[in-house]
Image 1 (cartoon, rainbow, N blue to C red):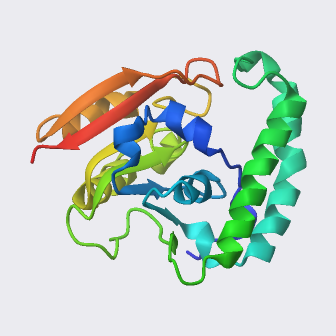
Image 2 (cartoon, one colour):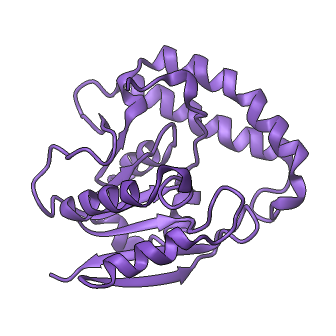
Length: 227
């Protein structure tokens, strides 16, 4: 089935949020990092400007900046309306209001769009759809990140998550997944089943982070290859 941009709700986070979500310290940021499902986040742009080595993967990168810009504007009102209807489900600490949220998200996505539009030769944004095989050798990256995708979309099913994370672990020494709840911020059986599967051959850690926006989504799953 063809990937359709109309079915995507693009919503990007920034460098500061990535650092908190994934507990990235200065030593981590010096490593080679892959972001899976990064979408219109500004993490790649901001980190690259600071001299870090970041490669982002997402199926939306098959589209042009203009197509993505149009879809972001279409999705903006939908997302913000949903946020207005569910403000009680969020922790207003790092972001203190709906207006600030909209400004932070749109600022991040505008930075992404400008960077994506100009990234013709650097190749930091690569079209890829998990769980398909990545065009990289084993252990090409030190750290792989997945923000608000894996484990959150339980409807994709157990097999999808196992296959996607297995491919990530093929090219990354370790992967970090945030958050470890579903779309309603509830812990699901999927998480336990996934951890049970990888626990046989990998080192597993669940770590509490400094980032919590949706109530209950303040834990990070880390899976490391035993190298």
